Amino acid sequence: MKIPVDDIPQSPKEINFSESIGELNEAYAKGSAADFRFPPFLDVDLVYYRSGRQIFFQGTLQGTLEGCCSRCLKDFTFALRKNFDFVLSPVAAKSDRKSAELNREDLGLSTYSTEEINLTPLIREQVMLALPTRPLCEESCRGLCDGCGVNLNHEACLCSAAGEDPRLAIFRTLKVGR
Image 1 (tube, rainbow, N blue to C red):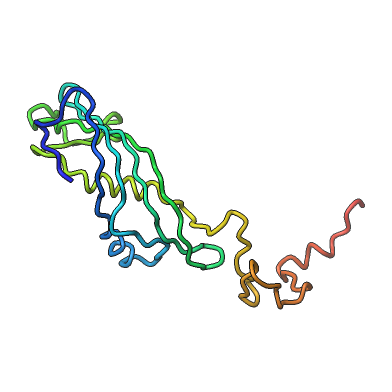
Image 2: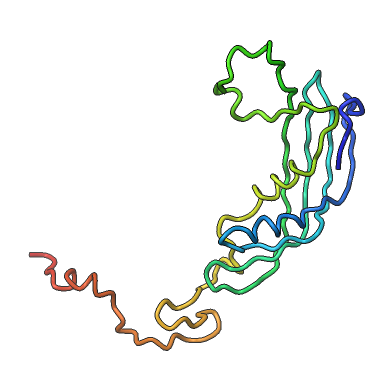
């Protein structure tokens, strides 16, 4: 979705649209971890307005994504809903800049330099920020047994209970309280 900068009012304006995010699947396929699969579109509710030359955006994105549990490797679906807000400031002209270095105030600043704002990369960024760092099918997921590989959520482990870590054997010989 693109919004011409000149059409952005000073009073808040609300729009609802579906944003295409299916291309994120291709980006994730290039990486080594395929933890998520994205639907073709997400629903976006957006309020935007300007104050001077700065443009303010507030909104919510929502949809259903698929994930691969990082504990048990089971595929699952989950609802993604994220509130977001960001501000875009115009790029300073080269004559306004004293040096090409960024200072502390510039690090959290998003800018625009064209006559229209392309919301697609901004929405995709918000989707990436909303993803969990470790996808879990359930908070109580017990995962896979590291010995036999059985899914501990569905069946009992086939390994012996005496399978102790040999690296800790020296600690079993210590006498406590002497």
